[in-house]
Each structure stands twice: as structure tokens, then as C-alpha cells.
Image (cartoon, rainbow, N blue to C red; front, side):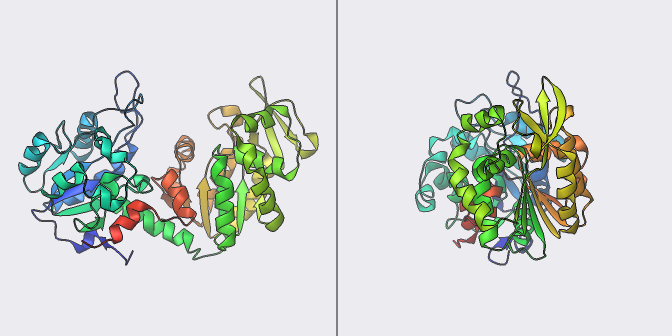
Length: 404
């Protein structure tokens, strides 16, 4: 954190402050009402502090992509933010045109304004360098009215988009509270300050698993990776375990078998560090049947890990000092196949380790189990979290290092 400024180091009094947040939220497809306000609540802390410090707060955010069902204006987001803060937050149906400029100029100290969806500007997502984005209409128009830029959207920091990187080198840039907390928590993980460090990789994003394993082992970040969900199936298949046609056909349908050669190399290089399930809950027309490795292959789809796997993983989690939790162990949405996720997530929650959890399904499962408050840090990032944990430089983080 010493490489760039935080909000503690700036006097915001009467300063027009651009804040890039991530308000992208689930919407009702018909009414376009927000069905979850978690991300807005996260960023509300940063916005409230800026308002309390008498800044003139101008909020930049996006919702969906043009043409997608969840694409919308940010009018309802502004209303939700007003309710969360208990004070009025303005909204203008414009991004950087005359109406937006007039609304920004009209702000008084301690007031906040939400501009319309930045993805309504086609140049927002154009493939350009930060220097090229700095010359865009969005940046050139808004920078003239602003004194400072606050980058608070860690969840969009992996995207080199105009509102994320364009203001670097043009305005003084500082990290908002969400960004600051993310970087402190994830920095502790990346530095592996305490050992053992254990990664729990579940869920269905198998394309990230090999990359994560390769990085954390080659950089001595992790001592163990515990696999589950579809990732567990893929690693077992790569090891030569016959799972059954139902499960292998699913891996084929998602084009996951392309990662088998890389995983096989990892299993050869780090045979004791990568842990795989030893028993399973299979789905027989909605009923659960628990089977072990000797019972495979099975003609039924595998929907969960079993109690022996939970026990084996639990012993490693009990000894851990740092835990990264990414992805459930099975089809947690169905109660019959929640046991593996409940057991392993519960062990993480009970652990005295510094624990970091991220990803939409992970957070949803934690909330369903009532374990959210027992995790040391819950990341707002999905793709950004994975990229950061694999050592990649995030454009939105790098932008905060550039001095104007």
C-alpha cells in the first residue's frame, strides 16, 4: 500500500471527487429492480466518508453490458444508495454531456451524484491503452471538472476501461476503502506471511484452476490445494480415475478436457500438494447416494463430495494459518447435495486462520449457511480476484501508481 495514496492522505474539502465503484448488481429481468444490494452497501462506506469530509462526490459505475438483459440506467442504484446512506444522492441521466456537467457544477460540499451507466459510452470498453483512454470524451470532459479520482472498484480493476484507467496521469489518484481493504487482505495472501497456506478450489470455473495451482506452487505461496466441485472431477479425471460417462460428458460439454495435460504435469510435479475427493454424493433422480473411489465409475452424475473428504480436508484446514476459499464443493443449491460445502465451509469458518473468500457462488453459499461473518475477509472481486492471486498486474490497480 505504500506505493500509492489512500483516502487518509488527502483533504477532500470542497474537492470535486470522481469515484469509480462497482454497482453492477443482480436485477429483476422484468422490473429492473435490484434483487441484491451487497455491492452498493460495500461502496457506501467510501461514499459516506467522502460526503462527511465535505467532498463533492461524483459516482461512476456500470450495470450490465449493452444488449444484455441486466443492462440498465443507474437511477434505481442511486435510490438504493440514498436509502442505505439515509441521505439524498442525486442522479443525472447523462455521463459527460451538458446535463452531467451542469449537475456536477451544481454540487455543494458533502453532496453526491450518480452519473448514468458509463457503458452507455461506447469508448468505455474500447481496447485502448490508459494513455489513449485519457484522450476519450469521458475522461477529457469529466477531468476538467474534477480535482481528484478515487479508485474503489477492485472488482473491475482487471478491466482496462476508460473510467477505470483513463484518469491515471490526468488527476491525482487514490485508493478508496474497498480497494484498500482488498489489496491489504490479498497482499497478505500473496506474500504467504504465515504457513501453512491452503487454497480451497471448488465450483465450476475449471479454466482458472490449473493457472492458480501453477502459480501458487511455483511461487511457494500455497502448501496445499484442496479441490472439489467440477474442479475436483477434472483433477481426478486427469489422474486417470474413471468417474463415469455422466460426469465426463459434462466436462467435455464445457470444453474442460483441454486442461488435462497441464493438470497432469501439476500432479506429477506436486503429487502431495494437490488433494482430491475420496468419496462422493451422486444424484439418482434427486436422491443422494454416497459412494467411494472403489465404487467408481458411476452412471449417475456426481453432485457433491462425501464425509471422508470433508474429514480429510478438515484436518488440513485446522492446521492452516491462511486459507483462500473459492468455490463450493458441489451443487449447494440443492439441500441433498449441500453437505460437502457445509462441512468444508464450516471448517474454514471455525478455523483461527486468516481466511479470504471470493466469487459469487462462494459468497452465496456462505450466506446460505450463515457463515459470512466468520470469514476474515470477503472479496468483492471475481475475475479480478483470480487474476490478482495469480500474480497478474491489474490495470485498475496499476492506474493508482501513476502520478499526474
